[in-house]
Image (cartoon, rainbow, N blue to C red; front, side, top):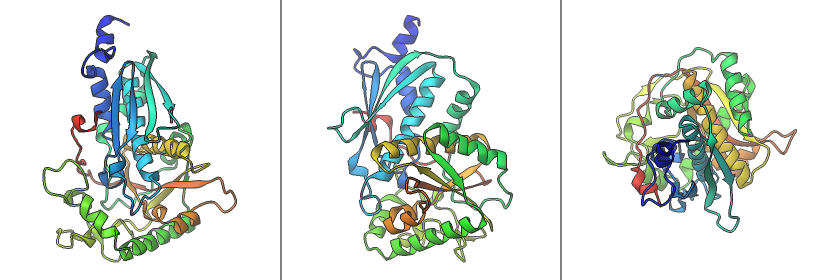
Length: 331
């Protein structure tokens, strides 16, 4: 390793991170998050980065345990890992390194030099291309080999991905629809949407009106309804695919450790989908209501815990989400 490379990462004596760390953190903050809350913070120090949750961005009304917040930060950790590999360094990750410091989720340090392979290069390129799409997808079926790739991606990060059959699709969409109804009846829910959806132009966070997408006139696909607080947002009705591909990402437990696995598995799945030319939409509503989340668990195996529901397919390009400047998330 020559001195030029070491200077790019910095030895921690400088007042700001080296250029390589900054480029990797630029990739980290492109991770998806619930309502684009971006609940992460980073502290760059000698030899590594500490990754924290930003508890002030936890959505208590729909995420009282902070599970989805941890998933979001874990997705950022995965992006950081991929970016470091693409820059030629092995990331060494210690999760939950300080048990008494609950908001510290990971400590990522520089490992030895590595030569990035084609998978790493493809995933790194996909970080900036990945989008959350709320648009109608084509009726074309997702190929079996593509779904196998996504399942393998989840497995590499300690998770699993189960693709629903026709009966499973009806069950899952029914639970999403029921969850959406329950959320609409909760008076705290519109407050959350008003805070994080449709904010003024130029904001660095939240879901912009351009990302709302059209609405399903007969609600055959129950996407999250931003029209609750923005009824005049100009959303038009549209026909969505008749048989969406639905997959459930799961872990074998439900602790903070499993949430960190799930968030990293989610991002590997989403980036792999992007490489494959697939679009994705999280359908997280039933996972925000305990009794409905339990119904998504495998009754034959109590260790199978659902963490994310995804709709997958081929859709039109989606607009990029807003992002906070890196200076706002650095400690």
